[in-house]
Length: 367
Ligand code: OSB
Ligand code: MG
Image 1 (cartoon, helix red, strand yellow):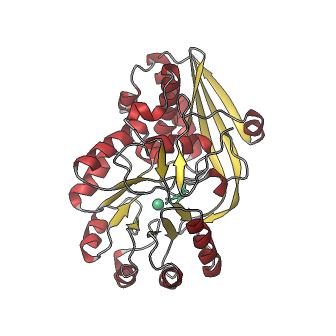
Image 2: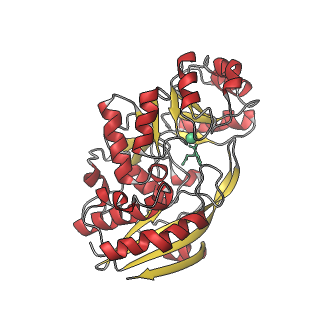
Image 3: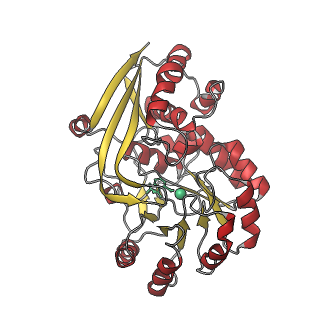
């Protein structure tokens, strides 16, 4: 495809309630939404970098710079015949998988819309609905118990709790007392070190499905040291920024479960490569989320239709996070099952008046 225009739009959408993790308390989604226009067809992508580098190193201003100065000009000059190799053509600009993903996703969507096919069919995704879990932000223990109860009643297939040192054993004891058999996981977002082995051994006793990113956000070797000392499998999130890094993590034994976030690993081609690697090695994987708007959420849903996504992911109902979203379609689960939007591309259309009302800046780059 020849790309005629790329729109870079920065939005701020309020969350319905604060989302608290070991690394931040977030009140709103601040995101870059990318629109690619080719032969009268639009495609949409979303970046998952934060305002400041709180989760990984990328930031919104850094991503906008790379998009404006390098990625968008290269795309408009070269076009794109196959989105599977688009990010490879940007390899001379190192790293920055979140910025690359934002633009790559828009190209995938535009390409699928031009073919008139749902995006999942280009990725080899056969499912038309996916089972999902819910990631609960930190809250008081009574609030957490009530929230777990509501999500279990709504049919969510797995509950994930955010933990940090001092906010772990009491929380897990209370949740396991009320919900002894639910599929339960914890996510530390890098809050522990190997010095916390005693408490990590206690966390190991709660029958958790896996422990997500207990140690440093870029670490492989300490996770590889920790893994054999626990019964519970380790799952990596922050550390896994590419197919190569995922392979390194598996080779080292740093994790036995893989959280793929499309936006963190560098887009859908990278997601597909990690998927194929995990399938070949019989490693269970699931699709994480970054509280994306409907655009990023729809991409995640399509990605999670690939058969290797065997554990329930974080692509829960949009209405858990947003009172109103930028897409016209409500992305909602029924009994813990998320239907995959069936239209061309990611299958969503934009709520233009709302999108304008949450827009902080917009710029259009032309060929
Ligand atoms: O670690 O998975 C994480 C949200 C923002 C940043 C990091 C994480 C999360 C979540 C929420 O856990 C996942 C979602 O509901 O999209
Ligand atoms: Mg995580």
